[in-house]
Amino acid sequence: MKRSTLPGRIEMVGTGLYGEAYRRRLAQGLGISRGTLWAVLSGRKRTARDVDLALLDLIDRERDATAERGMALTKLKKSLLSAIKVDRDAAA
Image 1 (tube, rainbow, N blue to C red):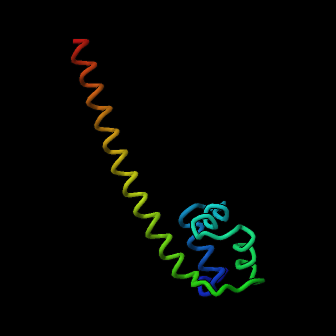
Image 2 (spheres, rainbow, N blue to C red):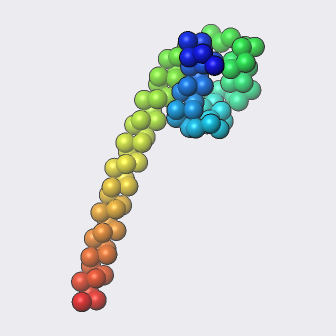
């Protein structure tokens, strides 16, 4: 699909964020039904909504969520390393 078309841009963002099976998660992220997403992708339906703006917003939200998850995972790793150290020190 051409990236210069709306369906092409939707597919580009969907696969970039969620992989090949992106449709359900992308529809959820955009706040639309899967049926509406399919209709827009197939060109059967136009929408008054600014889908490009919604895609940009979704990318930002996913980026922010990923950053927060990264920080939480780093904190979890540090806690685990600390617990391992305490356990090993106690065993020594």
